[in-house]
Image (cartoon, rainbow, N blue to C red; front, side, top):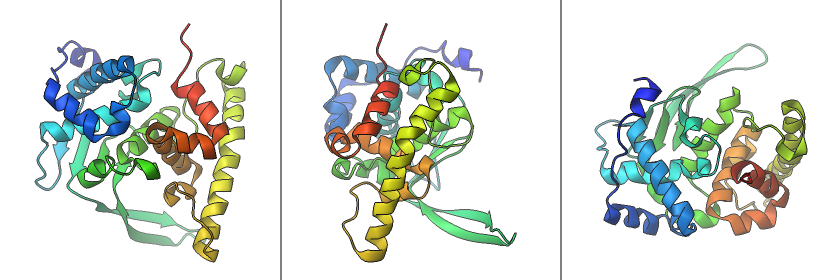
Length: 263
């Protein structure tokens, strides 16, 4: 259905009891200021109106499932100009009961094809649906100390992909970081994110190889700068104090992007 036709439909009501239960279960949502909680509820209703949920392999999409995913998915766009328009390149959300094995195919430098299975809790496809594991969505209610949140992770990828392939740099607004061009803004962004990623990757490798203390963020963020961006977004939204302590530079550019000053 065309986007403008979907927007003609009335926003679905969110029962008060269900909304309060969601805020209690996912404490980082309940801790938002009152004005932000009101906007979150409105965007959540719009998300539920615009998206289609599908249960995989017999999994049932209940109101609890849809509301929990929607409320967490809209958190990253809560203050972004355009709001839900950041997610207008797809409609479907596929939910599995638990993690799934995704088939991968890579070609090495010798042009040899390697196929393997990768266990995933979620996946975002460019201009395609988002896949999530319900067990991992539920786990987000108790994993904020580790900065883990599968919904925010996959929807951060969706934001990143608005500029094409996921590369750790979402489309930046004019004037970002005081830069006059989009190219300069991107350079300013990567001047902060790249060294943070390099340092995180080095810490992760040392922990794996030599038994040094491992970073508290998900080690999956060390696989690429796009994964580091998504992992960093998880922690930024669910455990800001720890993220601010360890990634002050990234916090500053994230604040400028995700919390733009209103004119």
